[in-house]
Image 1 (cartoon, rainbow, N blue to C red):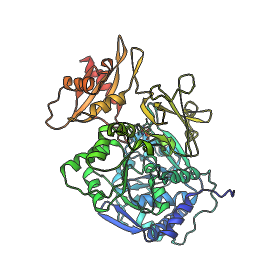
Image 2: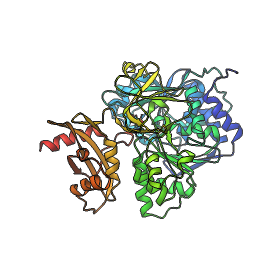
Image 3: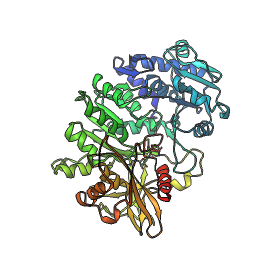
Length: 538
Ligand code: ADP
């Protein structure tokens, strides 16, 4: 076979040639902006030409600090198409982490949304490698800022070369992107994506048995473009010529519902907390979102009751998927096999609440403490290891690589079971499992159990130290407005309705107004453990 390189350049050039009329819709700071792939490709060429002019060379890192919108999409393609590296920076990280990762990646240029400028201004004195800042706004006016030199994105585009030729000098293993992922302890860790990895990942996202992204789709990524490439959706969507709808800055569940309805979105993707918020909006308002053929949910476990609500009550198909920054991120998808479609509703939902089967192209194994594979019995727990062309092989210039990448496998740090059908179920992060009297308790199972109660909006369970049992579970619960449910009601529900073993039941249930979340919307268990310890002392 021919050894032709896989490159992001061919993705944008395909959209430009074959789908020039297809639309991209983008909510910006001042309203809705619509254009076509023809215009998008032209502006991408212009951006690439000005980045070159600013001195960006092959292999240089260019950071983006931005929401989901069309300009960010242009940067997604312009930067790798000149052989540079698109470094998406998580805007929700604390200042010291932002400056750490910009310096660690040695970003040469930063492209920043206008409303996010203050976050970079705050850390500017700590940045050691940045030579130029570009501000993305709806006009060419430069805002007042302490950053310098500061250029206007729109001004630069207006001076760019629409005929600029993308690089022909790209090896498929060259770096194309970078994203830092937060560690349980310590500083964030950098993951580098190759052209080859991103192209193959996009190919996988187009398979009918995974996300089945196609030209006819209208895709709205709620998952941020600063987190694991918005799960690769902008790359795949552009390559396939799908219509893209970007929700822009400061999105709320209300805004998402409006965009889903107005632009007849067919696929949308985000973490469970986003869909919990959307469910509340859907319950209050009357939105017609019948066009949706898939709500993709990942990043944290999708509670079974949430899947039931979407699938059964709203008739909206729900796809539960699993992955991590290190896996580009798509790794497993919970799609029922043909012969599972006729199972009773509850069994079907039970399977859909698992994280699913490994996508074609990747390998997995689940091993015990000694590295032996565990039986596929749906019960025995082990750590999930992954391998494949879109799985990272190290962290960028980071000693922690040696613990996570061993003998050609990524150790995910996720504890799972595998059933006879090959469906994995995440029991916990290794660091979140609760070990009570030598036996494991899954915080995820307890959370899903609590969230199955009608009065519960959100629930998080963490371990607290215990003299006799070493660790015991305690729960934090957010109740619906005016709900009168008590701790005893919930414990009774878990034990008698859901049949949890008595020793699994949380020792304490704290009712709070909101569960603290990480920068990507997951329960912030570290903080919850601290709060629980304090409460127990009182
Ligand atoms: P970060 O580590 O920066 O929070 P990642 O997206 O890289 O962000 O997190 C990956 C982790 O998120 C996985 O290792 C796993 O623990 C969890 N995760 C991702 N998808 C799911 C899912 N569908 N169900 C349960 N946990 C998930």
